[in-house]
Length: 223
Image (tube, rainbow, N blue to C red; front, side, top):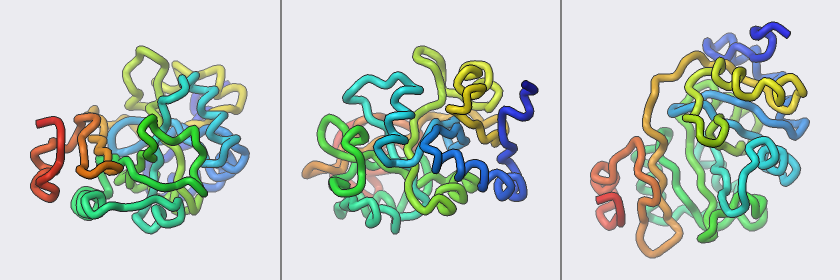
């Protein structure tokens, strides 16, 4: 099968619009999409249990290492039954959309337990990638997200890398790729746990803690 038919162009506004229908059909079939974000390419699915299990199987993800959720607006947090603390709300207002992941309380009625972290929170980010934002808006709900790479291999920054690494899953129809071009290499999103008394950096990333403290002075970690 020719490489060009294994992925959907997802660069221009017209290409994104043309890719939405097959991409949404793939999600509704409880299979996995590869898509560009503001940092690297991600793998994702719908957030029902069957879709999440398909992603777990593809990535061979160990228990206790959940995926994060991508949203396309803070209004989606209410639909997910997630709680924004005062600190989380301040950080979101300042840095969303963008490479900041917030771990939030709640979600018991909407989010499968496989997506809950070891400390009980749900990780979520409002992506700033315009094409992926449109996909999430059209889907009408959050999608899961994890880096698109094999264990021990750097996260993919191009669709070509995914085609090379995951050809079998693509040929079997388990995985479909949205080709948003080659991404500029960048740091992963900064992850801040907002489930405790004080917000805490649990993974340094694209936004330094010093910048986050400009809006939330009581931030702990990554000094």
